[in-house]
Length: 352
Image (cartoon, rainbow, N blue to C red):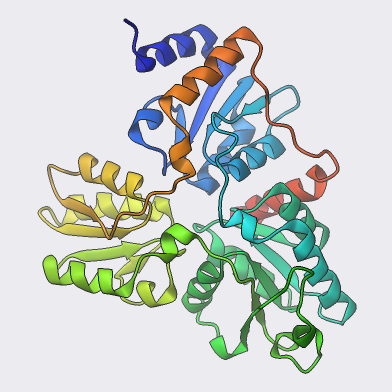
């Protein structure tokens, strides 16, 4: 009897160059083995313009598929094996609420530059583009935030307050000039709309969002791993709380973490690396470098939405593509130009 793995491989052969499957590093190995390109958000965004395949399958959460659809060429179709795989962080910054906040700030004489983490919806990206802003990833947050600050108008960083604080600290910014927003359903609270509120003078405004998975990682876990593995190196993703990052030896994107594991395996055989991020990536690195070093998760941190992408759902999608019945991802045409601008602006900033 043909296995799911074999059935997917057969469909990939049948579709040939008409198909390209992308996978985020947080996907499990059963899915990753079928991906033609793997990477973090920045790497995958950079690859989209060079893909010539008619059918692009994105093994990742919904906002990643939207980004791929924005950057895809005319005639290309983007599909998600699990359209219900959303991102909790992205839902913390609805586009209309962000629009209300930016409109209030601009009307009050604070024309801040919005910088949105790429883990956001198409609607939010469109608003950011309309207000002259851009997106960033954890890999390029420092470069993008520096660009925004250099405009001299102040920055609204949304939705991840932890990435904002960690990036600001890396740039050596004065934290006394930051202000975390409180917000209500309509936008700024009445107290925040008062010009005497600190946000009207702050250099950087922080949206009150975060990644629930990374926020669960704690300082106590870092201390416990150091006690259990003396001399270990600890690195974490900058979506973790600043108090956790302060106890680590390094922090960076998934690509940084992958490079750090390879570096330790090469330069310090026999060493132990503890990693604070999504567990699928950490376990994959552990298997990759098992012969030379030990790679351990700081704690179990599984993204339930990334876990919705399975081999079975990938197979169902590929069967639909082959039969011509699969539904491609559709995006609001009115939101595409300003949203696309945020992505292309990010790529331009990072290419300088």
